Amino acid sequence: MSGAGSPTLDTDGSGLDVVIVAGFWHDEITDGLIAGAVRALEAAGASYRIVRAPGSFELPVIAKAALEAGADAVVALGVIIRGGTPHFEYVSSAATDGLTRVALDTGKPVGFGVLTLEDEQQGLDRAGLPGSKEDKGAEAADAAIATVRALQLLRARA
Image (cartoon, rainbow, N blue to C red; front, side, top):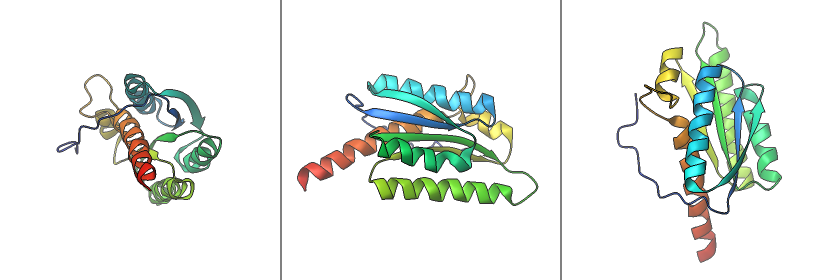
């Protein structure tokens, strides 16, 4: 498990509108990710809403629509578990590349909380549930807020 060396981010989300976009697959893990993102956004003072996507493949188009509609940032949450076919690689790559493209095309942050897993236990360990070792939903939300603030700083000095 990663997590060692994680940064402590100074997140102030006051005045920010953040959309959590989460897939429907693997309910227990996804619900944990959403709960972690909500905890982080509430602690930061950001306003937020949750929009659900059919799966991780659809996250980029919904994230782009949210940002184009005025959201300051998106927190993208999904769960992709490896199976016996190349489907895992295709969906993982499409979600990752798509969300990166959305961030670059819109100039707005996408907090990346898409878990690519070998098995369900890895997701349970990372979902921010009681007994989890990590809280990737909260980490993605914190990263989105911190990136908004970094971009604001850069744009103010331009």
